[in-house]
Image (cartoon, rainbow, N blue to C red; front, side):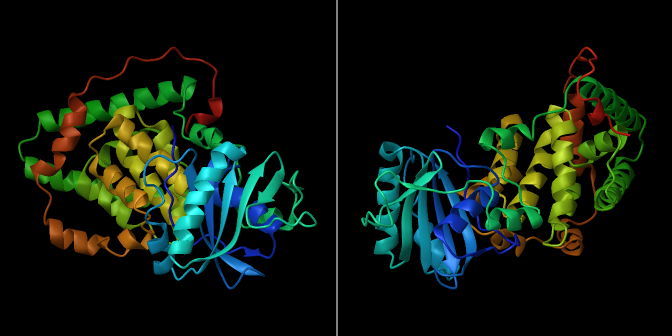
Length: 381
């Protein structure tokens, strides 16, 4: 079973919601796809009429384990006193989860604006029994064309058809694009092996590698900020650079509320293009950028992709733990050292910093795939 990890949006547009239809129209854009078999809690500020959405949390159904236990603490921490609970799917699947959520929220003193079930373009309210406003066969609503959906689109929010489509957005490139990246990676790794083999001063090499890698991180961010894209060789070099913790953390420290969209495009591109053994760092950085952007679904998928390659990758595990515990992005962002603080804390580069890179160099290269005409647009220019 796939589970999205809930998180608090950091800087996504605040949509003004004035009706049940507005809420239902906004949810797919806030979670990134049209939900199915899901439980969603929407937190509002400013009152149920014209209320301003502050956070959206989603779980897969059926619920597994005590997955709702921390929700009241999160709502209190964020100053949210009013929520709407929405279950997507058939009644036997949705009702037990909604009952659990409603019970927890009421025990915690949270005002419940409504509790809904949504299925087949209709919704039902668990709190309303008046046939005049809540018919037994449900109330139809427009899933696509409403004012909130249009506003969300203007703000750049996207609602994919389903979660599987979102997962496919991180599928590795294939065909000619994969072959080109594999060859570029082989050239870059062979070059570094040669440098290491002929080096007489490894400490100087480490300092040069780290300085060059941090410069490449900043250059790559600038490239994507201007609408560009790394060619295959620069992408492969950056993938190798990120194996060094100090270089990866330089990229992490540079993710801000003003730059997370640029980082999202950069690291999503590299997550798809890099050879598998280089993916965990890029996918983890994508997880950070998506989380800061309020896209917890993409963040969870990216972090899962990192852990699929390396289950012990510490950055991915740290971030996944934070998401599982409903921590808002600023909980880690505010503790992240600046690049200057990283320099002071970690000191000068040394050979031990390169050991993860050397370990990657020792892994065998994957055989080349036959060239095919698939995805010609993926070949970097």
